[in-house]
Amino acid sequence: MSLMRHQKQMVALAICAVLLSGAAGAYNGLSARAASPHQTEELQAQVSPGYAIRIAADEFSAPVGLAVNDRGDIFIAEAGRIEGTVPRVVRLGKQNKHIPVADDFKAPLTGLTWHEGKLYVAYVGGVDVLDPDTGNHHPILTRLPAGGDYPNGAVVFGPDGKLYFGIGTATNSGVVGLDNIERGWVAKAPDVRDIPCHDLKLKGTNFNVNNPLTPKDLHDEAATGAFQAFGTTTARNQVIPGALPCNGAIFRAKPDGTDLQMVAWGIRYPAGLQFGNDGELYFTMQGYEERGSRPVVGDSDYFYKVVPGEWYGWPDFAGNRSVTNEQFQKPGFPVTPLLAEIPGQPPQPIATFPHGAGAAGLLFPPESFGLKGDALVTLSNRMVMRLNPKTGAAAPFLKGIGRPIALAPGPNGTVYLLDHGDDRPGTGRLWRIDWTARR
Image (cartoon, rainbow, N blue to C red; front, side, top):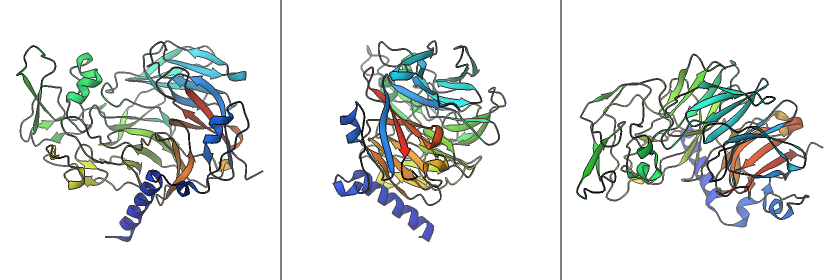
């Protein structure tokens, strides 16, 4: 084993130990600071020494996107997926006032970005450009293949002036199954399947399940192959043609949405996407789940740097490990490869998070926030991690927040954190984090 590989494995083990430990000592060094009407909630939030955290606003419904403009105006995108709510963008006014900017989007919204005087609003299958002064918006990206399990997310802008965004896969592990039927999208869009970015040759494995779409025939079975709609089989050495746009990939385009190009592919769910202070593009990826016709046991979440043109291993690798490894097997459901030929050897992740950590929001704060080039990564288990993008070393930066989902830099070194809340209206919150050690 190489020294570099050993160091990365030790980092992964250290992260797992911190996240999974229930001992108070696992969070030594975190402190709580509170001075507002939300004192009880704020005292539960523990942040690294030298930083202060408080609730800046609340009563949001399923907020998914956060953007701050050059003047410090704060915009929030609410998904519109909770009954009785609509997909909308609001501007935060004084005394927690939510000022509507636009509320006539396709639901649900998935992200929000500010760039050169405009808001870029992501929703399932597309991206609109929104004028925050008039509320007028128009689409620049449409018909993206994001109708399955994992949609497209917020766009980010690179040093080259182009917009970048990710689209997740339609399925958990390459095969449309009962889990996708239970999620409801197969009935609404029966032709949805995973679309590779380049031609792929298959082994021809098909998966049989009792067909819930024909309930009157109790003996009816449906066989489904990889990269096919439910009920469609594949043959040995069958080639699935690549297409653009595909899913399970990262893309770039001009700011008006033209000249769409694939940047990297084989990515199950690129949940967070940001450029680092070094000008490189990084992303978080959420790993396989133990569900569907091809369940994968105990996969991790990951942090990567984008290598242009690289294949990151989905659907036959978890990180840079084959899903045929014993650690990923469920008794009675052996996970075998779907591909007869792999496009290459997937790169090793920079950092690994435990199974189900929910690595999502990603931000490289400005130097004025004091993290010296490190990233912040939100985890769905009430935590934000600080991560060194060169070594993969990670440590808790913040814990005790309900469901952190997005981060954005504010003026004067401030960082804002969006808490999605639960699936009830009005439970989302906006937190403000300040570096106090410099004062």
